[in-house]
Image (cartoon, rainbow over all chains, first blue to last red; front, side, top):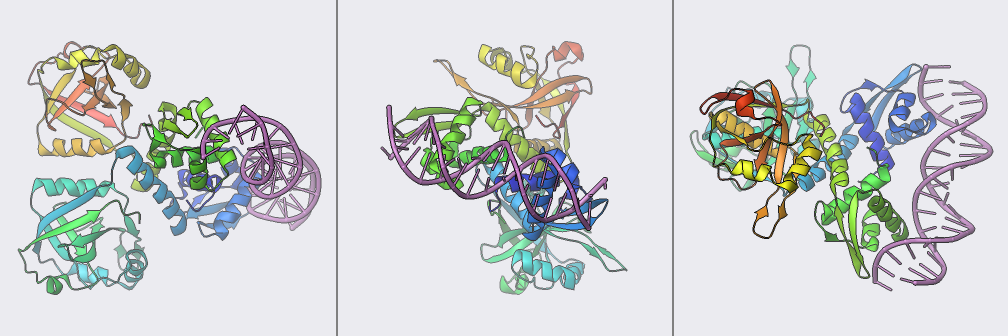
Length: 228
Length: 228
DNA sequence: ATTACTAATATCCGAGTAG
DNA sequence: TCTACTCGGATATTAGTAA
């Protein structure tokens, strides 16, 4: 925690007030009441959190809109993950196995989108090779694990609109593919496939690098102990 | 959070130092270093946390043993659950369906144990009817859900020894049984049954109250939004 | 209503030190 | 070494108030 406890707690309360990743109307008076402190102190804390890049504000004279941004969400997520380790127990690693199959080429389309690309670079540390590798999960055990995975906090690539189409939120988990390549598993909200499919991206062309053909069996390992 | 942020954070750091639910050696100097505060302040906070019932201490002249106890674990768990809701999204409800079958009568034995009974009363708000109702989960979907459930923070009934035998930790989730009776699902560490079985308790005799016979299909609903 | 400044004050922290 | 006391000083909070 790089933040003083009182400020972290302020951030936490702001999240409870609906400002986690989206704007919500929170006045300094309202926040003060929630924290049982004075309006003046609440105001000062908001100023600090904004100047330090934890939140974004749109101030008007009838309350201000507040949104916790990246640095702030990280701060909350860190504590969440640590508490998870303490309460639920030791770190978990989830491994998937499935067979490669050809998709509709849609993966290449959205992964290459300018808006997504910059976010991938920033949050995953690489720009994906244009195209996703589709994995068909075979056993029910693997499908079960995917469900489990969905429960964990992911790195989130934000969606956007460009007039014609809406691009949804993409959740990512850094993953080790075939024990060789560091890439990521993508969980897309609406995909053409069902819950038996996993989409992979990597900085390189996975089919070439790993000499993969359709039908080959691939192993994917996600380390959930990673504190993004 | 009934605790001031600085004290909550102290508790959190204590948990990281291995004192969550078990004794670990933590000197005030060590804690001070972890928190980047003085030894004196750390000492003061420990005194407060102990006097207020968040932690238990065994003080010796070469460091003291510290353990976060009930009130303290609740405080940490509360924040964990709230963060979970904020980060993972909306509250979740898990429903199970399975068929009733007769057990070995062991459920009645341990549920009635004096030590367990008082904890049930305190933490679940009722004393269970002596005997558990065993549910055989039918579909793979239900088994999948049980796995999911196991991931969530539960109300914990602590284990104990009584010379002859060791009684293990029991995890509970308040549940609505057959849309009628409020009871709880118990997850026992070592049970005779495998992961396809769910054990239920309630303040009343479920077989009588719901007119259940072996083989009947029963629905159990757990609301994970409950902030125990 | 709001946010946020300044000045007064309450609170908390740490140095020194004892047991 | 440990824990934990006192007390002066640092820090944070609030009251009063402006915009």
